[in-house]
Image 1 (cartoon, rainbow, N blue to C red):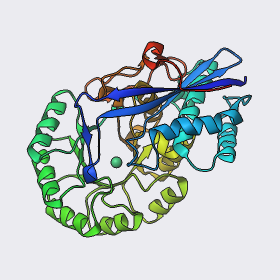
Image 2: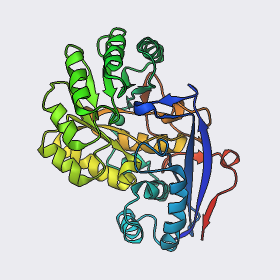
Image 3: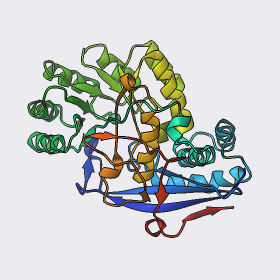
Image 4: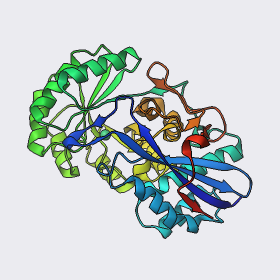
Length: 367
Ligand code: MG
């Protein structure tokens, strides 16, 4: 089987909540997502999606996905999309870095492999664990009372895990964490994600200010070293995210005992192939994981679901259903949340069919 054509579509994804705000005053109102379509000479077609969290979250931006595919695409015409390790080698040889550019192509090729094999991607990624898995709900940064109200409302929809966007003024963040903790019930889990927004002394004040709250702390500061120092001064469960973008730093963080949970985002690692490698390594080392992506619509959500559902249940801390945050559906067959939980499709491949009328005309065609 050979790749004959690679196309990319640009799609806007507005939010039900109209805006999503996190540390440092950063916000997005409409997400710019790229859907990737890989066509083959066997008539099998696969799809992927990449959606950065704006241009100021990770070293990634929406137009960069399209530009990168224009650069990378010609190197992949004629390659066998089922040979994913080889394919990633070709991508890494042709374009150094830019993991997020490669993510959508890699996801699309897993979709092709699954359709070719007649198996859901989660079974190819190691096997399905249980009927479904936990989701968290991200709570956009607002006043403490508004965030507590959001948590109560999402709790009523079935979510039991809540990730607060903090990383603002430390005193307000302490109030945010206390206000939300007050509306939680036994069994709920609370994560305070500062998204690198605190300096080290601010983070130290926050961990002291929420000493008696049952809360996980995620990525308090910008650098790994700052986070490690904060980690060494608190006994709150600790999550690393932005700093962990490859195996080297993952192994270093494990050796330093720098985290209890790691956040693995598919486009941060460069696709399902590389995130699966990190996932399997974490599973072998006993490190729990949040498995998700930076953002996305139905296709990203489907890819997340296949990776999350093939992760051993005790080590899957939580995951995300981004397609329920946005107002536009870009594919049929994507997984839909039930009682705060999600399950990967049982159909071959990702199990999705893109809505071509929503995607419109391709903005990149490589053949
Ligand atoms: Mg995070």
